[in-house]
Image 1 (tube, rainbow, N blue to C red):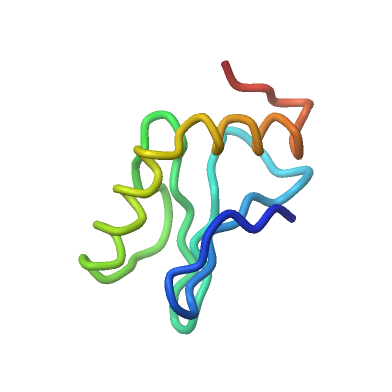
Image 2 (image 1 turned 45 degrees about the vertical axis):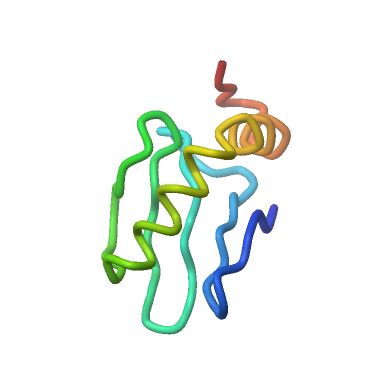
Length: 80
């Protein structure tokens, strides 16, 4: 599992051997959400608006890192 970022007690992670569409997970106390990488959209779960704003801003600023980490950990489903 590739931990990407922490927002307090909330972790952004990409899991290995995961499935399409390319995505990362937002995991924390009472939060278990899945966010698509391209487009950056909430695919499953919920989170407070403030946290979504932070996750969205981070994801947009770090798209290249997200793609590289997804491709490294999930080579069967590569992204461009």
